[in-house]
Amino acid sequence: MSFGELAKWIPSIEREITRGYTDAGDAAPRFRPFLGTLSGFTLRGGKRFRALLILAGWQLATHRSPRPVLPAAAAMEHFQSWMLVHDDIIDHAETRRGGPAVHRALTASHRSHRHLGSSDEYGVGMGITLGDLQEPLTVEAFLNVSVSAERRIDALEEYARMTRSTAFGQLLDVHLGAVPVGQVRPADVMMIHRLKTAAYTVSGPLRIGALLGGGSARLLDDLEAIGTDLGVAFQMRDDVLGTGFGSELAGKSANDLVEGKRTLLVVIAWRQADRKGRAALERVLGKPHASALDVERAQDVIRSTGSLAYSERRISLYARRAYDRIGAASGFTAADRELLREIGDRLVHRAT
Image 1 (tube, one colour):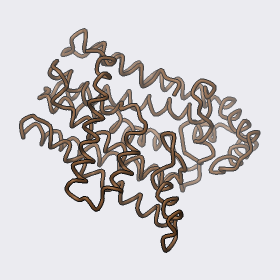
Image 2 (cartoon, rainbow, N blue to C red; image 1 turned 90 degrees about the vertical axis):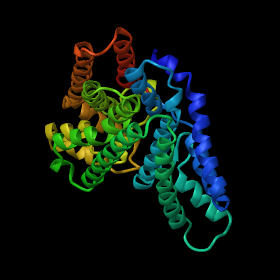
Image 3 (cartoon, rainbow, N blue to C red; image 1 turned 45 degrees about the vertical axis):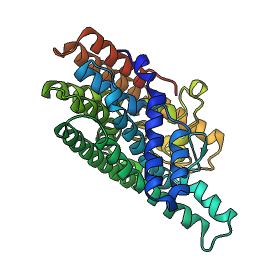
């Protein structure tokens, strides 16, 4: 089954997502309006990529219809919303998925109803709590998968491992945001990519799907290695796009620069730049109101120091290593290899 064929299950996944919020609201009617906020946020956008990787992992393990693991696919979407709601609070983001970030929507609601206290504090507090609420919805969805109890436990153990890894990566990411750029090592950035993005974007979902399907230890090891390489390449590509390179295709701006993110692009450029180049970077990093001219100058520093070219080489290295692993693994059919290569192409060779 190709990735495109798996994508035909997205409407079914979204019905499972809706069911999770509806069932929770039926159990606690007083909280339906808040669940409606979460439901609207989760369903208003997103490519359902992590959910589809659950189906892909199941397909690689069983070569059967993914219908039994649709609740697990929905679980990954609850998890993703949990991460995004909290990320937007940490990053002081105003928008997400074509609308207001959850905490900003709640801030606006508080203000429009003239409730007591600070609207901003209400929005943040409610956003954190609603993000937390996604975790029991995630676990409940995993428990609803119609496989043996042993396989569900295996999948939940992998989910716990993935969540812990993601949290460690986020801790390091937030911490390094408070450290001078010159003190951030390239190895620190790559550790974040492995712990956070690779774990919950690629390797975790693939392994959870495979565990639910009773996949072998060899398959799980292959998916860990392939998923980690593709996840790191995916994040590095995202950083390139988020720094404004290729944005004429992606419709993205240089948000990562003005938000002060310690990407590999910035860390390498800082190490290679002269005093003038570092000053150009400093005028932009963490400066939301930086001028367009200053942003262009910072981008020029990233190009001229060879940092952009270095990131592109690293992306190619990780992608090539993943494809080599796909070709060398002995347990895959020709269709399996094609599915994994298609996943890799969608992750790495993209403009959005």
